[in-house]
Image (cartoon, rainbow, N blue to C red):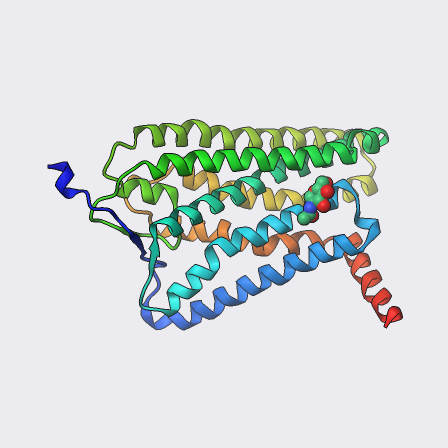
Length: 312
Ligand SMILES: *[C@@H]1O[C@H](CO)[C@@H](O)[C@H](O)[C@H]1NC(C)=O
């Protein structure tokens, strides 16, 4: 019985966003503008940090890693979304779908780990200012980044391999705008018990531990600020940490809502909007949240531009 139903699926259909046909061009233009802003904003940050020697500190090296990750993260979903909005054919090959899922998970995870590293960096800077340079040595920073990449790669590889062993039946329509792991699991017709177990255990650990570490860092930071009790110090600390906190709450708020309490059936419009938040909006806002409020970045921009003028 089951054997007859199993056909080898060579491609999936991405159903895309629930947008009425008459608003298609408006949203196409909006997403294109957002994608270009993401690319340009993050590239600008990476280039500034590479060019300006004053920004070669752990905080900015993590930030440039974050920008790089954001750039890749939105490039995994956006070009395909834009292409699908324009054409009638919204299919994606089986391999393409798994590849997209792998990289999406990898970059989302990398962002997750980098946010922890950045919170730890702020914690050391504020709670142990005198030992900051000796604790956050270049060696430790490189170790943290390399460790994050390795964990990220293993994590996404595990989920992708587990998904690759599943067989899919006739239904190949993904009611989403990218190859989302939970949407794919719902299409599978073999047993997905192990996949779901791993999603709950590893996925839970992978979101909850970093989130917990970040919260602890910020509790420490806030309690040490309250002890400080000089208004100037407090304002300075809030201006550096406030930007970081807004990124963190946007990112975890949407991820926790989607992956810890998913709906049983097809993703609702609300869930798709939230997926848009963390795949499109967060990578776009990160550079602005960090650089618009940050004097060091503005000064670096001026220095880099002026140097260019002189050398020309
Ligand atoms: C990422 O961080 C590491 C360690 O701080 C640094 O050496 C590297 O240049 C950064 N990479 C990017 C792309 O910014």
